[in-house]
Length: 211
Image 1: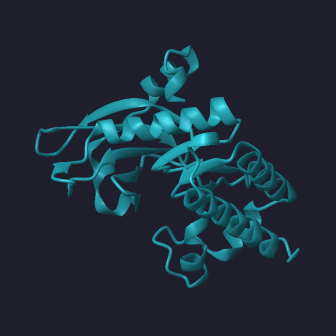
Image 2 (image 1 turned 180 degrees about the horizontal axis):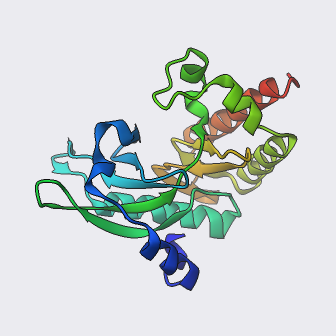
Image 3 (image 1 turned 90 degrees about the horizontal axis):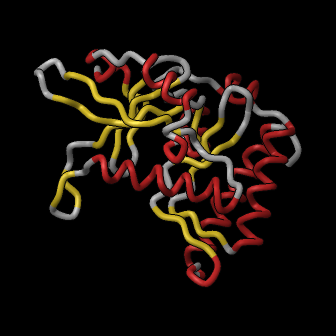
């Protein structure tokens, strides 16, 4: 995680990751977020880099990605929420000679919000509903319900809550725009967060045949 970037294991992992300019080719684009693009490095890692479009009169930057990593660290350390692993920063030389900076993160199988497109056969990576079903286990549901309990207990708001699932079915929070709890929580924010986690629980129950 970014909060443990001095950990020797993480340092060695980052050193071992080789990112060639071809990673930024269109066919390696895994998806886009509010201010970043995710490119596939290999089966286990992705390269997150700021998108070029201008937002609020300024281009997106590494600071946006660092803020997201900070929010993930906060959710993990302060609320015991499972989050997407961010290993640290890396840069590569673009084909035009320019430096492209980004974050190396773990790669997950799918985002819960993309299941409908997978169901329709529109997934760019060719994922099928069999891939989704084969990854989901009863432990997936247990972990989602544990996250739901934390959200309710802590009055935790996760703006634009998104959950990604690994091949082992483990759910993690990814791509938060903001996160806050307790006296800072708003009624609107809590409602949105609780709706998002409930939708993921209902989806997993349906996949497990429990709905």
